View 1 (tube, rainbow, N blue to C red):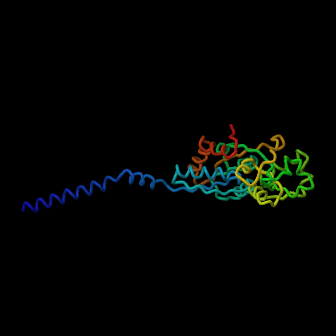
View 2 (cartoon, rainbow, N blue to C red):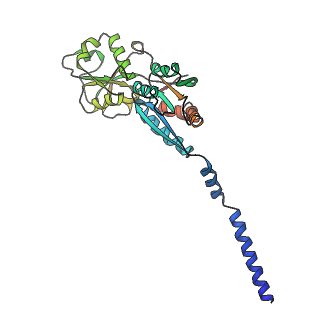
View 3 (cartoon, helix red, strand yellow):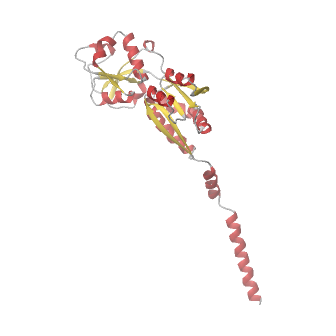
Length: 269
């Protein structure tokens, strides 16, 4: 009888230990449960093509800090992106390389004024294939021996708008218009120069810095074109407004601004 009682006692102790273990998960298990409890969020950001390299770095850092958030980017010409948003494209944030494209969305009510900010600046430069010795400045573009040049389509690509303004201000546009190849965005301009499809192109300084196949021949005087301002804002109809606002604020923080500056952008005060 004593043996039976002893066996039952041992079984009870083992049962209690099992229950206790099941009710006290490890710290790792608790962390996983907290993480799993956060709703998964996907944010769509429409951003100027010139922002891609910096945003790739920021995307990785942000998602490491916020594993529940997936950032999906749609890079392109700011004018085209603005038109997509105006037509109802499902976007959470807009990061424009042109203040007027951004202001259009504010004026039509797609972005609340308090949910937008002028964040970055940039410079406009003339680039040529690395090793080229014939083009050393904008005036050289008028020479007969210089073939095609490329800029973004002025109606939709801010860099193209700035480029045309600058060439007009320098009295060069009339001489080069007929040999100008228009591109869908600033990265296509860069590609044309890298591959030798054109003799020169006008891009942002930040684009030139990420390519080892081109060199900067000259920098446009800021007085020859509209100030280059990158504005970012939350789309009012975003289905993920709070998450979008958190990322919007992160973009204005020291960590993100440092990345932008490393890629050649200037931070607006």
